[in-house]
Image 1: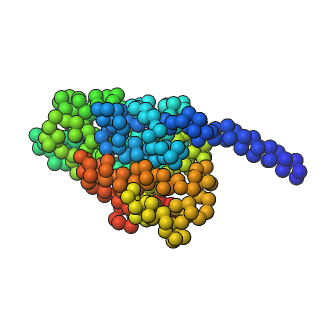
Image 2 (image 1 turned 45 degrees about the vertical axis):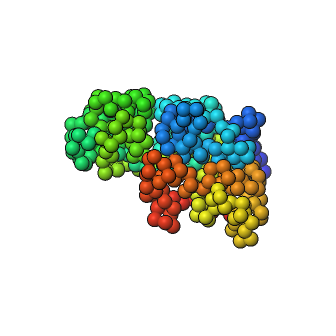
Image 3 (image 1 turned 90 degrees about the horizontal axis):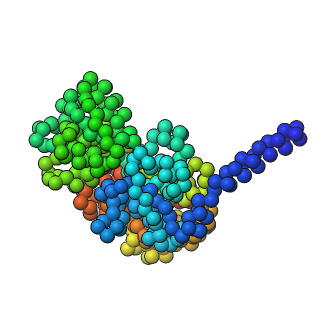
Length: 338
């Protein structure tokens, strides 16, 4: 019995030792003085640089929120533009600390790439963009179509499944980057451009005459998009996960960039926990008591970030839809801060 106990203890100690070797991301980021965040190569509304090199977007705001909780400075982020093909390698190799790049959560990615998805920033689905001149009103009218798609995405398999299920023929024309895919579509090399619907709206803005193109009504897949971190560092996993959850909870509680200082004076038990005036939830994450305040001051709550980047206050003008809070008709939901 004693021998069994000591062997089990030794195995546990070795396991914990191995885990601790990986659990250095927060220290590495602090020592470096900047967060390295993988983003797209330019997707309006999610992650795109302006003509001065300033990055904006919903995925960008997640990175800035993480920098806010670590450094109390949302500008301490190095944005690393990555193609769909290269994004996972950059995370696995340690080139980036977090991947926040319109990436779909699937079981194969979750189990075979050495990564953890930390939550869902945007509930999406795949669709089709076509020229109005084709006079196509439904994806079911696309039999025989040539379809432009970006390699390294889930879109190719989804197209294959959809067309096979509906006994339709098609031709895939694949490209390495989103820009190449869109240019090929606009130049007429294919009849259809397929991607996540949010990306279709974003890429349509880049076309010379956006009004000449329409997104068809069919949604052919589930595409839950969210940030990723490497396996092996539970503390960093928790920090990234709870940064997003804090943004969602802040919206649910009515905490905004404008009122956060006033709301932080609340004497309600729930609010005191959220703002760190009661308990030590921030310290348990390896952060400060005011971690939620830092996030909201930096980027606002989830609803503010959504509206500013992809929603009513943006050029995309995408309706909240499924991304509305769970108590307002959507499915966006975060575990409670308690």
